[in-house]
Image 1 (cartoon, rainbow, N blue to C red):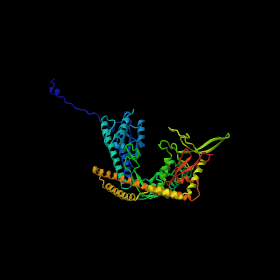
Image 2: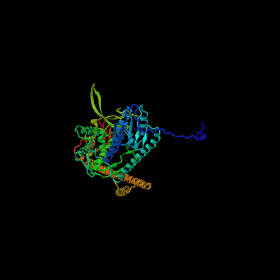
Image 3: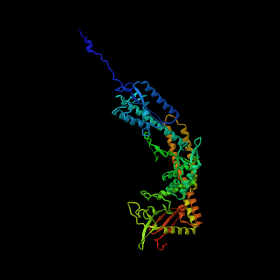
Image 4: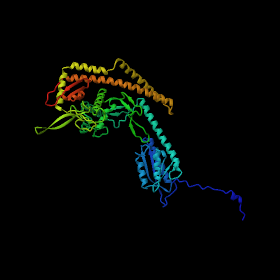
Length: 552
């Protein structure tokens, strides 16, 4: 037989391609149909998104029905949740747990971005599902990727990375839009859990008078000398409802309400920021991004004067609760007149109220005294203090004698008080500058608003730089304005306190008045107590060791 040598030298090669796995046409080895899970997700509750959800589900149900080797196991759907992480995606996490238990064979989803916009999450779950004893594949319909296909890994990494970058871009655009609204004086103030305010049809804040009574009560009780713990207990006892409709109040919730500038009609925007668009973790804005203070944005529940006085009282208490180094802390108490009023003249620590046991002629007796926290060994400190305690009745007696003496020198107190007011009062030049700054801030804010309205879809470096510069200028002018305004408020506060002290000295004296007229006091070793009154005037009271005459 003659052999064709040409055929041997030039053999014909036919390539038989490997079968591309898609999971679409394979039945289980035992002949049973594959159980298919469908995962669908929309990121908001908007009507159009809900329609998209229904379309996703109906599309995949139809796809599964057309395949004779498939049967639908379950549709897992997350509504109104982000895809940047899986923490709050209840249906997604349930699906993963069911996959681990082998309840289905395949997951079908619309796209990688619906499954996860976080590359790490996406690849982690793909590999985990692929490595199960009974491997579970994922079919991404839009990208036509089947994860049990050995050639899908690289393509999946690239596409999921693009989805992650898209998510970051969307987050940046949303943040830019929110910031733009802030710069235009349009804050975002949800009223769902905002005690004292509702929203009208146009989105404006309006006072809810029923809830506003609770807000006014809290501020009034604070200025009457109560601490946040006592205020919270009183509200809970009276079954006053919180913003969420509960009747359980905490000290922290009361403090937050007292520190909220919105009750004075103002709005500080961007108090917290999201640093990572993937984790969505929010942190307090400590110079991370600019803040925007919008004055007189809505009707106030608390007057400017009362709100400023409340902030000063909170600051005073906070200062009294710490030693000079800020290392030690105690709780505020308004139970006794001198609570959180006195500091130790030896070490600077707060003076606390003590119930002391002693003996006289073999019989036990009790008395109340005021003593340094460190000297009384009520707190562990890295130093010692030799300060002596003073009996409460002696302290009260010394304070009442001081007030009696002050009654005789009202005119001198007026002179000293007016001097303290003059030191913080604005000069004619500063008043003029304050008005100038108002005009400058209004002009710069208007420029920022106009630029924000002209913002183009494409980012322009020149535009961004100009806007950042304007915002920086606004911050500088605003800081100067706030400093001058703070001095102006301080002078108004001192004037009010001086009038209150003089009015009090015209009437009967009572030790309980210390909460209303005294800022703080320093208890020295020789039992002298140096009081600083809220109007800026200082006077010294003279105590003694009980049972002995005092020397002035």
